[in-house]
Amino acid sequence: MRIGVPKEIKTDEYRVGLVPESVRELTAMGHDIAVETNAGIGINASDDDYRNAGATVFATAREVFEFADMIIKVKEPLAPERAMLRENQILFTYLHLAPDPEQTRDLVDSGAVCIAYETVTDDDGMLPILAPMSKVAGRMAVQEGAWCLERPHGGCGMLLGGVPGVEPAKVVIIGAGVVGTHSTHIAVGMGADVWVLDRNVHVLDKHWMQFGRGTNGVYSTTSMLEKHVVDADLVIGAVLVPGATAPKLVTDEMISAMRPNSVVVDVAIDQGGCFETSRATTHSDPTYRVHDVTHYCVANMPGAVPKTSTYALNNVVLPFAASIANLGYKEALQSNPNLLAGLNVCHGKITYKEVADGLNYDYIPAEVALAAA
Image (cartoon, rainbow, N blue to C red; front, side):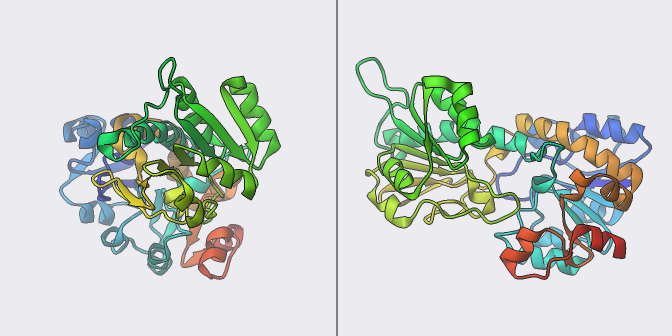
């Protein structure tokens, strides 16, 4: 199969779809790889590194798209990239379609086969390609939140862990999944007063087993959410409904009741955000203020640490990419229900129910769409 890796063009995005080591693995299987020039510059991978791994380096994204049977990216394709997609071409990347009607419309119109990293599953029902970026974002959320709490950056001037004799900052983490767990790990390590809210008692039990008395686990009701958000110095939104728009759990009224110069970090912003006051920002301009509360809502947080993120991502993407390349998309999807769960758009049909429901499309089960392909 011919595989294309264009350079990411989203603002402040420095990751790349395949690292040279992954290219070497795929070329050894007999596949042809085309990489856009400077695609790997953000991870310190030169064009010669890709050539030495067996890739051909093209000067433009258009050449890559015209060459490839399958495009492997990191972030969702922007409008200029979507315009280059063609019928039957495979797109394998993060999509986050539910809050993005324009992208969804363009992918439907393209006739391409679009497989979303964030809805691919494993045998335990987990999300193996989303997980490494959730780990990175969860750890970064505390790091960025601590930075925002510093007075020169508009914060209330608190050191997250305090010092002996001075109380630490109260950190409230909404959601005890992958993001929440990794946020907790860093917040506890920095000495914060950590509170974790979730609606799954089994998840809260697991969280307690991991962190013990280092955190406070709370069953999330509207009353508990309001109580702890209003009292927090830093709130981290770590809510996920796979493939669907994130629920707006924190209201404008809650934000308005928070202390001046407190901070919220919305890690769910890729799926629309879980605060009513959230809107996507970039690493170049990461924050804004609503009701005297600093909001950090960068939509591609792991892009700031591209070397760590790209290699972590490739560790889980490579086996799936190899399966698609070796078998062709139809056989690969039909033979692997976990990969099939990633199919969101197929030949003009929406094949992921949460996306169809959220954007008012007819839902066509993936198996049905593939059988008709």
